Image (cartoon, rainbow over all chains, first blue to last red):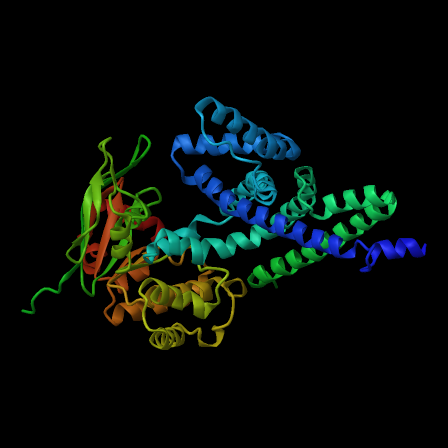
Length: 236
Length: 259
């Protein structure tokens, strides 16, 4: 029992520093992929709503594909598949062969690309929930598109979409565990290594579970209060 | 004789169809400074569509619009359809006008004061203290001085519409368009909004009002325009339009209301 505690501590045999680093990395990857997803999701939603026909189609197909395949596959494809394709191409054309891409970047990007597909649907629905008169009142007073988006659309969309975005964030956080396959030592990967090298899988996976729960609970609470704040004008 | 006041709006031969249905079949209208023009007509006569063409919320199929001496940026695209050729120029033109809607369309996430201050502050980029002072004066004027921090959801329809009118005046527009401003209100609220509009007319605001309020059209406006089937059926000063020489079609339009 004392051995177990030493394994979890900050001592020379303790895994605590690495696990904490894993938590930080997990949060960083999740936040990056969420941000990528939001930016791309807004663009996709805009494309679906206002884009020319070919762009609407493209955005639609993007959503169907990225929501329809396992995330692990997207990660494997981007991290291992794409470099191997580039490698064989570079052999054919005599380019310098690049090494494996940075796991953090590709991991965040993979999860972000999938996240964007879900977020696009949420934003599309959110904009659709704003009455037409809201845009018209702004346009009639000379608002440009950007100003209208920033001052009139965004705050109202935020209220509608924040709860749904909270769900996406939770998925993001959990899906970031899949990035473990790239060797990035986020929380999942660190737990795997710890469980293997100490031969205490129950201890470390149990701990990882608790840590994930702490992360998800804390962040949903944040989203809950964010949602309440963005809703302050619609209460009572 | 005093020289005629300058022209604020010139709309020439405005046409608009939705699918096969021709809603506006060539309407022209000129508004001079200080005029209050009431546009009357049965439902489906095209009066709201015409009003919405004036600030390009609807793009007409044919015709020209000018605010003051600035032409609206309308040009034919390669399919021969009229469209807004320069979005920024259209937005600039709209900054000279304002609109009051049937459904108020206040921005729900902004307080009463913020609603009134938004356009002069963000669109016209006026000095904040000056904008605040104007907003206070206007809210006082529309009887909403005690409601600065309230969100629109808390207000009655009449209160919301009075705030919307203050919002429309906040930029000191050359022309205010009213699209059935009292149609969504209880009779009691109608009176408070009409009284406010009357006082605006008396201070010389240039207004174009699409309305069903015959008494307002008769007593307040300087000119009445009767639309029928997408055309100007008749128009003139209220004394003529509501007098013995009124066109039979306009009299027929009025008669159910007179009953």
